[in-house]
Amino acid sequence: MFQAKSSTHVFVLRVILAAIMVILAAVVRILPHPWNFTPIGAMALFSGAMFRDRRIAFLFPLVALFAGDLFVGIHRLIPIVYASFLVSVFIGTWLADRRGILRIGGAVFLGALQFFLVTNFAVWQLFGTYPRTPAGLAACYIAGLPFFGNTLAGDAVYAALFFRIFALAEKLFPTLNQPAAHLTQ
Image 1 (spheres, rainbow, N blue to C red):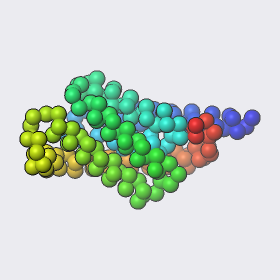
Image 2: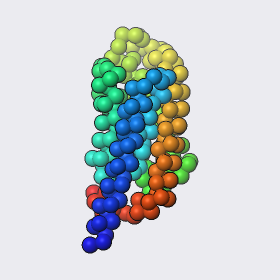
Image 3: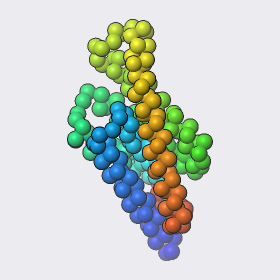
Image 4: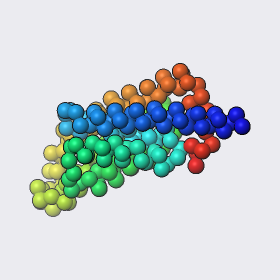
């Protein structure tokens, strides 16, 4: 009986903390910021790392993206962008049991890199901005390098904040460290 209450308590605390971070991610995304310097990639990694229930892990970043898109606007690349952030959630699952600085840094780099590669390929493929040749693809990637820098920096800053805040919460609420049976489903 105590385990069920403890599991429920852990689940509720994690959901509350993650919900606060999702709201923060959505709000920060609609505030003025440098291009691609947003918390969404970090939120995706964080969700993948924190939630054993994959439905929740994949839902939180999509909610933040959608909430932001209601203000930022809808565009042709949304399905590609959303899919790319779901890849970042999957990368975040690699952090689930071991959230060291090097692993988080590696996940941040991989998440930003795959976002850069996927979304720039989509821009090259879907828009007529660049010729559909290897040279056109290379030009598209070169033009996107400043955005990659901002994506990587934003993901790094916000991942550091999210994971540090959660580490502090684990110290304040030791029950967050307890495994919760229904979080592993």
